[in-house]
Length: 117
Image: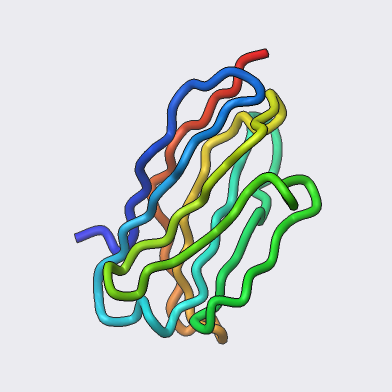
């Protein structure tokens, strides 16, 4: 069983919204730092948002004010609400589940988000 799996990607027009979800398996979720990363063609994977076990959040400047990360420890899920999408948000989005000291570190398979102009 894949430890983390994303869903919710797709094609959207600029200015639109999408909600990504990540389902995590195993007993580590509530203790994990959850993160969303993205990788655009020809670019390095970049961190865009994290949420700690205590629900403290952090965002990349490029998405601050537009994206919101949240988690539901009862359902072992983390979500990324993306608003005011721009063509430059086009990328494969990955969910990450890790411990604070990287004792465990799992990646999903990624989900494509395409924003048309």
